[in-house]
Amino acid sequence: MKTSVGRVDGIGLRVAVVASRFNSAVTERLLSGALEALRQHGVAEEAIEVVRVPGAFELPLAVELIAARGDLDAIVSIGAVVKGETPHFDFIAGWVVAELGRQAVQHRLPIALGVLTTNTVEQALARAGAGHGNKGFEAAVTALEMASLRRMLRDG
Image (spheres, one colour):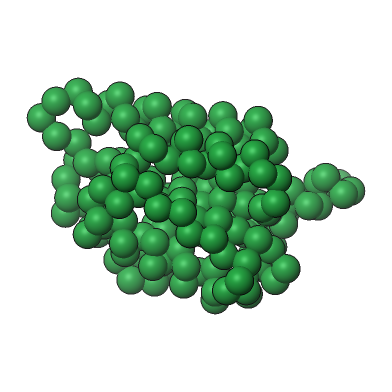
């Protein structure tokens, strides 16, 4: 039986991190975690591109535009959608997640989901902690593993 598993190795990879500025107390920590993971796993500083957008709603368009260039091995999306008193949360969270997933398949490119969808800001901050308790860090690791797996499956 043949089993394929990607490696978490960023050497030679080009990765973009698209990060929302809204809920910046959370997203700045997620972005820091993602960048830490990329550097820790060998992605060269000059091979990392950071793209900032106003909010989570804007993530899919920015991801689409940079994915369409065809010069990346993976993209990490960073955002935080916190439930409020209106149904706004449901519309934004559902659309952003579905659209990012669609783009990953359409572009055949790993697009890791580092977008938090939480009930409270406290929950979001807990998921944006230091090191391995940081969902931005985890999303970047996922992006690297999927980039490796993509190469394996594509190149045979």
